[in-house]
Image 1 (tube, protein in one colour):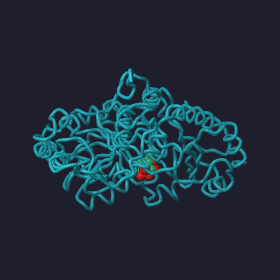
Image 2 (cartoon, rainbow, N blue to C red):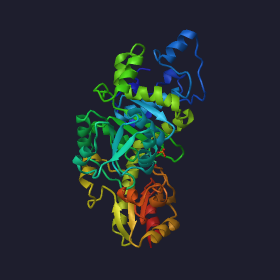
Image 3 (cartoon, rainbow, N blue to C red):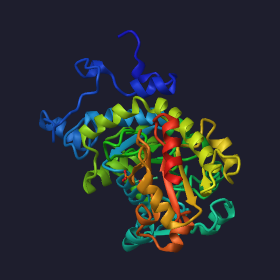
Image 4 (tube, rainbow, N blue to C red):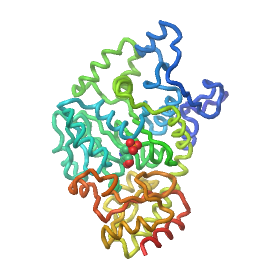
Length: 430
Ligand code: PLP
């Protein structure tokens, strides 16, 4: 091969989503990424086994730890994101929970905003506290002093979503990243609703990005998957992360130190948590995800174009009390959307129905093109009532803090013909 697109970092996003991280010459020149459907790999001989298990040699032994199909996926998302390393996990929640466990231990806390996906809130309010890790929530996500007040000497990370679920609220990432770094802790962002095509959080100071790849990255509603990407180079030796320091000391004689230092978060995530908690993505699902990523930029452009049209239609409709979509001039997040989302602030919007809950439920019954489903980020358009589904386990106070009321519907606008989406909503509302 005279030109090796798989490792050329100067290529554009759409070229990289098709080629990055995969060299056919290393896989019998198969043009599609092969699915290594095996539980384990031959170790070869004793010496190689020792090298693999001490991580002195890169390779694969058992698929709970790594698999070549997943390795391509991990390199591809790291390339698209502008990060140094990535890990593929069995779901978005696996990506988020393993990230929190990697960062914090009993006695530590994580500072987060209230406007999170329901599962992430539950993790921070109910599950992790049982293991001594506390979630502390900032009062006002738009006020940087609120974050400052929430931090304690034991805070190990600030956690936000680039587009909140379901109200698509936007946080000033640069300001929060600055505060995190002044306090020697990383900023972790769930970038699920934006994808690296609409926003690359590392460019604004984030250190770790989590994905529910179940959504736009997969793109076709066929898989459950999660990804964690590391920017690389965070100073884990600043005194706040002794567990990272001892991990470094454990492996500094077997792994090249530059690599270990730069990708310390991902290596520890894989070698400690993925290895022994066991939530690696299956190679077949990694393959489906790679297929989805191949068309990410094209789909996102169409998603955003449709979402703007649908939002404008809904904003002018007399049955609608409120549309929350940051590309609308009326949105309180309009200015932040211009700054962080020049290509458009995603394709999820929430609406409140003027006549209340019963009228909202009637819309769910009447839609014909939109499907009543809890998922988002499918190529197909979806609609849901968050209070009785995605945010069901939360108290009314927590729901309202996340912008969820009993008359709220969340729409995930797909890539169908926009006129069909608008006429479907028109007949359902009327
Ligand atoms: N993060 C966000 C923003 C989500 O919307 C979801 C699920 O809807 C998750 C994380 C969890 O992802 P998964 O369902 O893949 O575990």
